[in-house]
Image 1 (cartoon, rainbow over the protein chains, first blue to last red):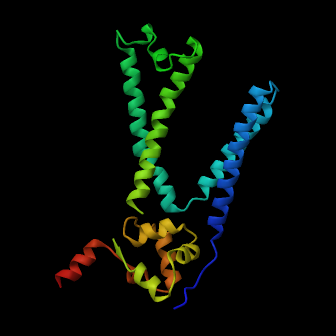
Image 2: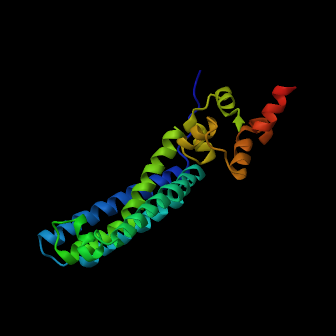
Image 3: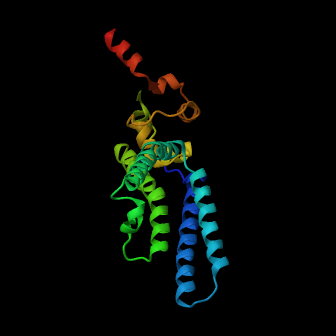
Length: 148
Length: 72
């Protein structure tokens, strides 16, 4: 019995191209950031360019997803992202409590090694974004594990 | 929702990847639809029907119609 094979669809080819381009841009970004720091060269615009390229290719990649994969994104952001944001809010509320509050350097506790202002900025940014991203990734993985 | 994708595919000797290429979706998506873990949108259901040259009802059956058939 012969199996009739079909070449990959145009969407799949586009998806793979954008995924590879996004990965290359991210790698370029990492290399440029490293070079910027190690060589003390002013590569700011190249770094920004690589970051924008990664974002643009990332959007193109997402737009090339089929409806099941798009649904996975919706569900993962809805449940995982929302759960992560709820966790961020809980942490924020906890930090506002007297005794473990911002007044006592609550945000600085998260990254004790960094100097005060940098740590506060980084911790605040991480507090707002990381739980949602982690929640998204967990829910996205669960979505596909349940459908594979 | 139940469907006859696996049977129809087997009748034509198509792999999941072949059907995926014909539908312009990923193989994982075909697997999710085939195993009843994802209900396709109407446009995709029409596309599937066209690929197999059948009506949508000949491929997909909702739970109510399956229950009604079982009761008969």
